[in-house]
Amino acid sequence: MTHLQNISLPGPTITPITKPFWEHLKKGVIMLQRCNTCEEWIFYPRAHCPHCFSESLRWEQASGRGVLKTWSIVHRPGNAAWKPLAPYVVGVVELKEGPSMLSHILTDHSNLAYQQEVEIDLITAGNQPLPFFKVCEEELN
Amino acid sequence: MSAAIVGIGELTPVRYSENKTTLSLIAESVAAALKDAGLQKDDIDGLLVGPQVGETPQHVPATVAEYLGIAPAMANTVDLGGATGAGMVWRAAAAIQMGMCETVVCVLANKHEKGHVPTSPNRNPIREFDVPFGASGANTSYALLKRLHMEKYGSKQEDFAEIAYWARKNAQLNPKAMFHGQPLSVQEVLASPMISDPLRLFEIVMPVAGGAAVIVTSEEKAIRGQHLPVFLKGAGEKITHRAVSQAPDTLPFSYSIPHALDQAKMKIEDIDLLSLYDCYTSVVATTLESTGLCAPGEFGDFIQNHTFGHDGDFPLNTHGGQLGFGQADLAGGMSHVIEAVVQLRGEAGSRQIPDAWHALVTGNGATLSETTALVLGGTP
Ligand SMILES: [Zn+2]
Image 1: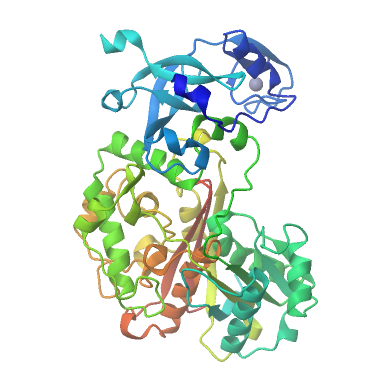
Image 2: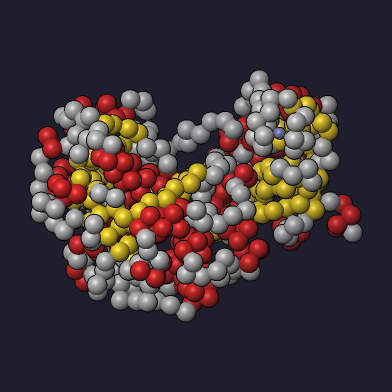
C-alpha cells in the first residue's frame, strides 16, 4: 500500500473528543474508550458512554483484532480521490471488544469470508496512521 | 386518526433539469397538489419541507413559505432522508390533531443539473470514521448491508435481481416513469456493471430531477374534497443509527411496520398495495421480511413464488417504484405515498389494483437508519 503515499486522500477530521484515539495510533497502539461504570467498550470515541450514559470513561489498549462482519469491493468510489485505487475493499469489523468499526480491508479478494478473523494493519496516509485491517496471518496458513 | 390526504402533485421526473431551482420545482409541485385538491393557496396553514433546499441550507420552511406566498401557522423541516415523505404525513396529521393548523402541504423537490456533481454535506462522525477508509456515499453502505444479508442467509443475486425486474415491469404501465418503455430482464440486471460489490447498476435508483407534494387535512374538510379522501390509518417510525457500521442486528422495519399495522388495527393480509421504499433492491428484500409476509432471510423464496404487478398476488410498487420511476432525491420517497393515494382513489388506470382499500407505505433514510411506515386507507 505504499502507493497510498503518492495520492492525496481525505484524512480524518479530528475533534477534541476523538484526538486521543488518533494520537495513540501515531504511537502504534490502538486504544479504545471503556466505561468505568458498565465496563462496555466504546467506538467511536465519545464524551459519554452510549450504553449507560456514564461520563466516566478511560482509554484502554484494545486487541486490534476482530471478525469481518461484512464487506464490499468498491468499483466506483463515491469520493474521487479513491478512484485510482479501485477496486478496493471496505468492510465492517466487529472488534473482539464488542463495537463495530468501518475500515479498509487489505486482502486478496479471494480471502474475503464472513466472520473471517482480521487484525489491525496500521497504514500511514499523510501524517496520520489509519487503522486498516488485514486477514490474520495464521488464517492464511 | 382523523386526517386524510386530499391532494397530490407530482412532477414528471426528468434526467436533468434546466432553468429550474429547487424552489421553483417546489412551487410547481404545490400548485399541482392544490389543483388536484381543489384548494387555494390561502387554504394552506401548515408547511412541511425537506432539508438542504438548494437555494438555502437554513431557514428552509420560512424561505419556502415566503416563496410560495403563504403564512403557515405550523412549519417544519423534516430530515429523515428517504423516510422524509412518509414521515411528513403523520407529522402533518399530528399537527392537525393538536389544533395548530388544518391543512398542511408536504413538499419535496430536487433540481438535478447535467454536469453538476452533488457533494455530500456529511460531517463527523461519518466524515471522520468512514470517508478516510474509502467509504463514501450510499452505494457502498448499502452494498455492505446487502453482503451481510447474503452471507447471513444465503440470499442470492438472482433473488435481488427479481426486485429490479418487477420494478421495471410495473413502470411499463406508468407513462410518467423514467424507465417507461425500457423493461429489464433478470439477466440484464445480473450483467449490469458492478458498482460496489455485491450491488450492480440496475439495482440502484437513478437520480433525476422532480418534485412531489401532498396535502393533508382534517377529516371534516377531507370529506368535502373533490376526490375520495385517503385516510392515515396508522404510522410507525424508528431511528436506530446513522453510519452503516453502527447498524443494529435487527430487521430494519421490525418496529415501524408492526406499529403502523397495530395503529390501523390491521394485519399484513389486509393490505392491498405494498408501496415499499426501494432505493436499492436489497431494501425491498429486507422490508418484505419485516412485513411478516416471509421470514427473515426468506425473501428469495417469496419473490420467486409470487407475482408483484397490479394484477399479481402481492401488488408491489405499481408505479414502478423508484427503481423504475427515478429518484428525485427526497421526493422519490414521496412517490410511494402518491402511488398509494392514486390506487386507493381508484385512479390508477391501466395499472389499477382491483378493490384496493389499504396500502402499506414505507420510507427509509440514510443506511436503513430512519424507517417510517404508514397504513393508508379509503375509509376513516
Ligand atoms: Zn457505561
